[in-house]
Structure formats: C-alpha cells, structure tokens
Length: 574
Ligand code: GLU
Image (cartoon, rainbow, N blue to C red; front, side, top):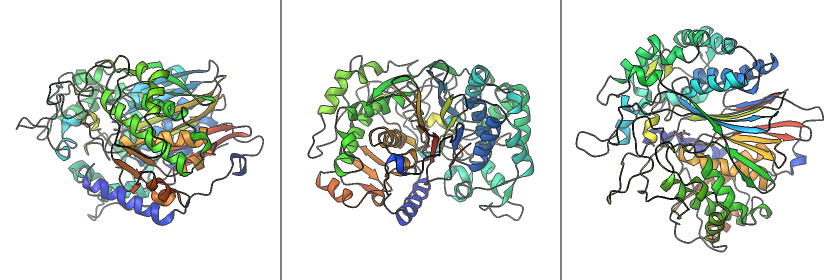
C-alpha cells in the first residue's frame, strides 16, 4: 500500500471512528424486514447510479447477469478507482432452476512473455512497489468484460447490446462526481498523478474535479457503443487493443503484452467450491480467488462455539484466532491452480480443519500460528505478495431467484493510472509475489509466469440452505483484508443471525500474524478491553483499505439488502 493510500484509508478510519457509535444490534425480526410481498428483485452496489441502472435492466425483464453488465458499465465510469473495462473479476452465480452455483473467473492474465523476474529491477532485485504499480508491466490482460459476456451468453435474457444505455448516457451527457472518486483523484496515490489521470480529472481552469460537479467522458461513451455492438472484441481486438498495447509499452517498465495476448484471453467457468457452515452451504470461486480461504476460516469457526457468542468478547476472540490460521495457510499455498498445485481439498478436509481449530487456545492468544501441512501440500516459499486496494463488490438477485455475487477490480486505485478509450488499465500483476523463490530456492506458489493469473483475495460468496435454496450473497473489496471482511459478514449473518446490514456494520477485524487490525470504536462497550485481556490488542487503521461490503439475503418476507456505510453503496429492490 502506498503512503497516500494509507493516509486515505487512515482518514477514512478516523471518519468512521468519529462518526460511528457502536452498532445497536437487533434480532433479525426487529430490524424492519420488508412487509409481506416485499422485494423479489434487488441490486446492491457501490454507486447509486449503478444500482439504478441494474434495477432498470431487471424491470425490463433482464436477468441478474444482464443487470450485472449494466452495473459494471456504470461503475467503470463513476467508480473508476475501483473497477472497469480494463480490469478483472470473479463472479459466483446461482441458478435458481437447477440450484447449481457456478464460478466465473475473469482474472487478469500475465502476457505469454512474462517471467518469474517480472518485477525485478535492473539491479536484479525486486523493484519497489511504488515503481511497479505505475509501470506498463503491472497490467494483466483484462478479463472482467469477457467474463460478463460469457456469463451473459449463458444466463442473459436481454440482448447484450441493450445493456449499456444508462452508462453511455451518463458518460455522454454527464454524471455527478461521487465524493470517493473526487477524493481518489485528489489523493497522493501515484496513479492519480500519472499524465492520463491528471488530464482526465483536471478542469479547463486547471483545478481538479470536485465531488458533486458534473463530468462527462465522451471517450468512454464511444467505447461503450463499440462494446455494445461488438462484445469483448471491442477492447481485446482492433483499435482499442492497439492503443492498450501502445500505452503499456511506454515508459521505463514496459509490458511484454502483445495483441495476441489480448485476443487470446479466455474467461473460465467452473463449478463453485461449496462447503458446509452450520446449517448452510457457502459457495465461492476456487483459487486463485480467495474464496477457499474464507471457507477454511468458516470451517475452523464451525468447530468452535462462536454461534453462542454474538458480538461479544469470546466471539471476536475466536474470530481473530481463526483469521490468523486462515491467513497463514492462504499466504503459503495459494496461486493459480492451472500452474501450481493448490492443496484445496487438503485445506478444507474435515480432519485438517479439526486440527487447525484445536490450535486455538480458548483462553489466551499465543504466538502467531504458521501454515499447516494439509494433504497434498508441496514445499512452498513464504509469500512476499503485497496487495494494495482498488476494487468493488456487487450483489444482484432477479425475480426468478437467480443471483450474482461479483467482486470486480482494477487492483490499486485507478489501476496503473493509464487510460485508453475513457477507461483505466489495471495493475493486477502486482498481485503476484515479487520474489519467485525463497532463499532456499523453494518456489513461491504465487510467482509470476506467462499466461498465469495472479492470486486474488476476492471471494464473492453465495450462501444456500441445505436444500440448495438461495439464502444470501455477499462480498467486499479491501485487498488482502477481503478474506477477513467476508468472513465477518458471513459470521454475522449465519452464526449470529443478524440482518445483512447489521452484519456489514459490525467492526472489521483482521487477525494476521502479530497484527489485529480493526475498528475499535465499532465494538459494543467492554469488548476491546476484554479482547486485550485475552492477548488480542485491536488497533485502528491497520488495514490498507476500508471495506465495501455489499449483501442481499432472503427473508420470509422477501429480499433484504445491505451496503457498507464505509463507502457510497446502496441496496435497492422492488
Ligand atoms: N487486487 C486485489 C485482489 O484481487 C483486490 C484489491 C482490492 O480489493 O482493492 O485480491
């Protein structure tokens, strides 16, 4: 994380600390659930205009996946610091008819010419992150749009070409600049001072755009028109692809990406990974997503009595310890399973989870746990991956009950700060480990390689009941903290039985090695002191990025949504 990014997140944390009284917890039935005949379709996303665009598609008879395309198109315009046409995504999709859950992988991919030394400088040493994130070689082949196109061709009801109208209109005729976008543009993040970003965010009078001002992006409108007409080819082939390659070859750390790399991008669709948690089944994409790590955290917690400790000292203590165990394994073993063997079955095996859960001392936290030795694990180097933030989460349920939970990203804020066709290019390859080997020569699971997809923390979740019916969808951005953010929402919702909004409002807590990063002001009275007495001293501002958790749950009276008050999201249904 860059210093300016840290400052941005610290000021956000200060804002939260200043404004947030500890959340008042209600029983699920108390927090004004929708009346009978409540919503049957809903969109939760990080910007209100994006949510409205999604709702319009749903009302026109579109499916959840159709709406996701429209939402992504608006987010790329109004939240360009987080996601867009130049980025990647993971999507978990629930098909109400078949009760099957599918994982779509639209992760950015390293060009064929990338090597394990991708981020080594001329001195033969890993380069400083600040240099790497704005260099052309940080960009992977973008996959979010190709992924959405694949999913839409399988589960869409409207024509692809009809899904971009709202975004195009906002780009051509003007939109109100959201406060977070203006703050990111004015931040000291290195991407915000790249020439393309400066040109985009500077008004004719030489000052930067401000929140609430009307801004246009005619280049983006033109790109959307092409995308509507041609599909993903509009950006992966032809003139825009040529501009992407030219842009990424500029500057001191040029990319090896070729037109062939762009044209040969393929999204993937596989069955989701689903595991039991209490009375539920939780599904996420497989690695290189962070989903299975969340499932490991849940599996460990299912072996404790956390359900009996709603938002109290012991509940948060158990959470903090499961978080440390989960991250220790995740950091050692996760990478792209098409290139390295990820011992996922071993990590999620009941006897392995039993052994991990037994490492939690019920009374007092011990030294940080190391990674375990799950069945199928190879020797792996300690991980050296650093992940800054710049990502967003959306959840959509349509009237047929199909559901989308999607985390979408350009990696750091504004990706690498380079623009083509009105959108930013990602710097996702900085999610690879900068050093491919440890001093003993053991290979890192997440070392860069040509055609490989970098490890992700993103973990869009869908929860089902034991009959395979939709219970909830949820997820968050937040760099490496995503895994703990998602774990918290799922524990709040499923173990503590809170309405999804209250689960989102709960304090975030990341137990990682010796660190317990959290939001001390958000705990009920006495919890912070109680945790300290058990050896868990929570500190504010220690995670790179505030969460942006969004969720939708099914209740007996219809759908109920939640959006993270730490960002600008809303959940709306009808
Ligand atoms: N690049 C990160 C990942 O894929 C996400 C960054 C973020 O959430 O801001 O895991």
